[in-house]
View 1 (cartoon, helix red, strand yellow):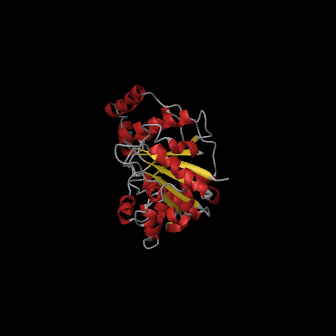
View 2 (cartoon, rainbow, N blue to C red; view 1 turned 180 degrees about the vertical axis):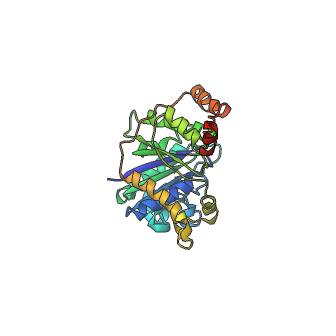
View 3 (cartoon, rainbow, N blue to C red; view 1 turned 60 degrees about the vertical axis):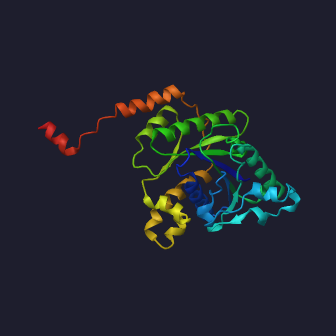
Length: 288
């Protein structure tokens, strides 16, 4: 049975970089993986392929939406580590609906019997959930994974996504797998949030500059590690996430905080941060 993931998070938080490295990590674990980019920029799979691949919606338009004239090689491209790549594309700016594009993408891939060929399908979805269209990939997913950092804006987006997961779980077999903290030097606000809205934290990746650079280079961390073994430890973070995914835990149906609760929770933490604990030497002096 195919395991389907939908990766969400605030725009610019590093979802695509995270998604590509998770896809490779899953492939390293012996799984056949398809990553589907759901962003009009069609750059989700850039670090897997090294170029911007043609989108499904553009291919469909070229063929006048004659599905029978499209072959798998027209829309599915091979990426690093054997990960197959698809870019859904998007509607024209200011017109159309992202949900429609996702629906057409899924329809075409099912026509091509592509969904039956993979162990894992990963949807990498544009931005935070702001409408039903952007939430469409959740209709096809077993799990949602949220990428965040240790800041208020990203956690606010995470809370909105959690609300969407709860709503979709009413009618779909969807669960939240957990949070991934990406490129953050601290996790105090993440911990504060999950103490109020319980959910697993799959991994927190430190502030590693090579993660950002990998996006510019158009390479995954795994490919970069082939010539720079010092990056092997970074790859272990993604392999750990892949192992948790493949364990297929039960997941959670989150109960999001209200906007007012979230503002009170995190703004209070900014205004009244916990006092640092005295170091051992300071404790010794205090006891003298």
